[in-house]
Length: 306
Length: 222
Image (cartoon, rainbow over all chains, first blue to last red; front, side, top):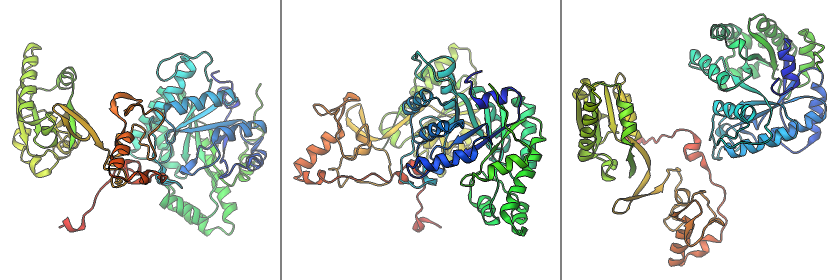
């Protein structure tokens, strides 16, 4: 056990894991976070707390993670390289560990030009793979990135993201292998709508034996409308939304219900793929969909492990 | 101009060790003026490499070429005959030149012999200093003709910081405090009042922070 987190226990004991996502508010209102945590509690093994996702300023992922943990829900704190150099990242990680955070998802981060401060200077001192390597060394070697030793090390369960829909397709698996070598113990993928392509990617993952070295959580999420699907298809970088998904939502009399049905169909399909260790449900600003999805997918109750 | 410095010989020896025929390609522009490239520097590196490779028992020819600018297709394309015979082009241009070679000769290896440093100028014989980092939005009219982005170690727009002492920077006593220079120059011009205004946060989207940049001039289009 690297961290002793609930997520690590669930995965290492062979259960099919469920994680969800909780986006911090664009204000400092803790009640918003508490309400979302109440909705998700009991329906996911841990929830990702995004770090200024899409480069839009929100309450910090660490602070939000602590609020969520107080409500009895385990956070996966996300950390990006966009806004902090290696000094700030290491400092924040020590702080997060001191506050009881046990899961960390390491990301390079969306470019600042995507967000609400496109004038900002990007940091990108490290990239995601370098960040993973640094966090692993901090934990396993008790060393800062510079090589200096520390007395008490932060013990994180280290995660990373993978996008089976980014190009060059073949290279994305090699990049995943680099993340695993650097120290990624669990992987959460980009939202999957093109299951056929994801299955091809998983085949390459298995051929490299990566599914035996890391836990792969397939990213899924409900779509509210055909318009939202079309937006993701055309405007969101790194997304692959096949035309038939848009058509299916377009034809539905109740698009929201159809969006949840579609998500359940995808969960059923990805669950059947060898090497998928769990799902990561991304229902940003639609947290209330998570309990229904987990229930109808037959993923409840969540395992209780001491 | 672009200032560059030759890589240590050991590193050049290492990165050329697997090649047989090598073409050392100099550039007669910026990097020649800062004595990193040009005919003489190309000849010196070629003879050093020939000698070393002979001692190491390596076979192959080392050819030399210097063109006007390694960043322009027409000059680079004129190198084709010599490039054909080489396995490796060892570029003594800035990073722009190396990338031009890689693009124009996609089947040849093009490796850098220089470390490209900065945009700057010679301030005394043998000394070049950084002046500009190409942030994409020039404010030299506000700062006495001295750039705080490139010449302050923190790129402060409302400097100097508390580490400025005796006109020197806390990073290194060899570095002049950019803000001391700005202060002195505006004082001389009687424009110190300009420094009372708070300079607001900079829009970095015009810099590399906005992604790799391009300039389009309609008038130059065909």
